[in-house]
Image 1: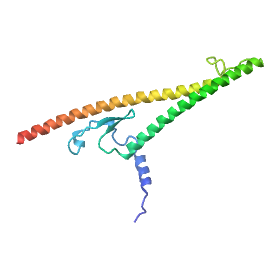
Image 2: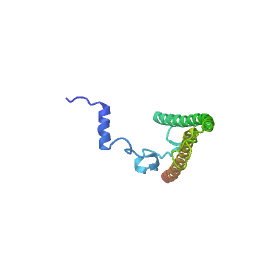
Image 3: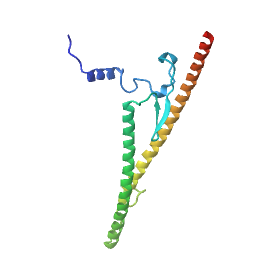
Image 4: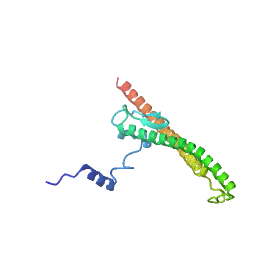
Length: 180
């Protein structure tokens, strides 16, 4: 009788063989499924938006892992918005620091501090915080575009699945009417 292998070791073996993990199962965008893959009548998913995050709902209640995914995405979004707000506050302080530097440079004839390159000839406190705000806004916009593209793909998948569901329902209805 062999020793019992813990489940996490078996999962590791399955991952190495390519049986589990990323890419192991079908994507929600691989729909519509072939009729042979279904166990009963086709039930198309419903396209839902949770705080502008698109997803396909196949059944209620939604699975725990999906709730966790939304929680993580919303937490990430809130973190970015908080960083934008903090960076804007720091921009105000950085602007005051730059004003102070100019006063000191003028008072003591120090000249301006050189910048990192020709695009930014003068090194400022404000520059880094401005870059931070710009980066967070860019990430937020990229997320919006990514969500919109995903929603469009999901919509197309739902429409195709609904067409097939309607066709199959008509075939079942036609078959029942012929029998009766």
